[in-house]
Length: 435
Ligand code: GDP
Ligand code: IMO
Ligand code: MG
Image 1 (tube, protein in one colour):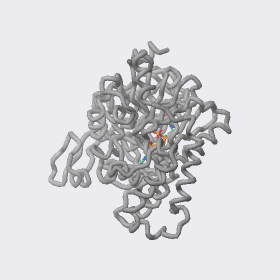
Image 2 (cartoon, helix red, strand yellow):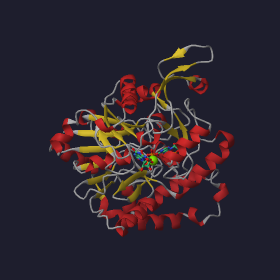
Image 3 (tube, rainbow, N blue to C red):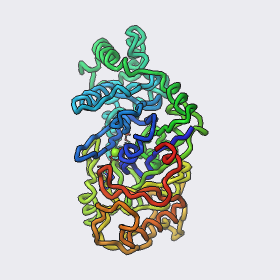
Image 4 (cartoon, protein in one colour):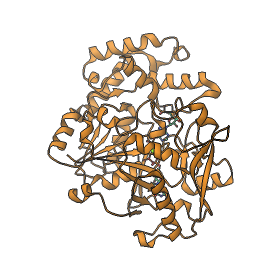
């Protein structure tokens, strides 16, 4: 029953898609368990770039079944477009399975996301405006529409009517929008239902079979620890739980079914959207890292905020995920940047130094990072494939981070392409047995 959960250890966009794609060929199943098309997972293979928002990053491996689990919120317009896009590029998507219990993002969720952010004004969260929050809100309020509802016109229409009713006031700006018409939405969603029907399955049972047969399963996280609705920097978070524990709830397996948890982190840090970011570099160097790292959102194209790697936040992410390995991506971006900083503590307004992530939001908003300065390297490391090809200072940087976070680094990324990785130390025994 080996399985690996791959999760974001910072604020998202760490390169989870690349790591999942890398391991997918050894896996029987790759399953997404939360989030929706707020995610953007990039894979670069042989010069070709793929960006996935809903389809799991294992889809390029023809022998792997890809599951969109019950915990995912699915915009069927986006999913069908993504399927079409992949088909047009010759990618086989017959192995895609969609949970009948997953909730659907409806046109009114997109409108509510927009209205909600506009109402917050300066206090806006900076959401991706993909309707994620309103969809999870309806799920909790038991007003959600699920994938299985697409297959029954009468039920679908009744449920949409019930879901629309309490939203009339908030939706007033869209009153005359034809996209809000009950009949129009019902017909449109029935069409999606016809298109997606062949992919709808009992995905929990499919996962149980794979796990019981001892096959390798990968759970693909979207977003990241510090965007977690319970453990992140609330309210500047997403509306789901991106931590590894949610892989159980979001697919229907038990905690003992997860054997390893890999946290993916950049060698620096980025955040897109509002909220506290203690190590943010609001200067030319931050701009330089943004340029070198191509730090612009995969989903919205927004410039990502950049800053130094933060081991206080990473240690917290490691704990709440039960992380067994780290994957450090984008190490190549730091070459030639000069002296590197690693945040090892937070100083509060009254001069105290914290060595743990503060639970109180106000404290986090006001902390000043305490840094250790480490020598950088000038070399371009993007062609390195073995540990001993890396500059001494790059290795020293990695060892410092590893020791401070307390989780072994399994692999590092030295470029966007699939082959631009360096494995450190022992490869996971799980992977060795699956190979
Ligand atoms: P995800 O949301 O965690 O899957 O990450 P994204 O795909 O949103 O963002 C990561 C970006 O960094 C993508 O453009 C990747 O192609 C790119 N990338 C991933 N790993 C590396 C790496 O090791 N080096 C460099 N330079 N780019 C990387
Ligand atoms: P991947 O999977 C980075 C951020 C948004 C915003 C907050 C809430 O590619 O790492 P939402 O639309 O979810 O209600 O927005 O969360 N956010 C992400 N940031 N990567 C992501 O996904 C994100 N998904 C949501 O920018 O701050
Ligand atoms: Mg992303």
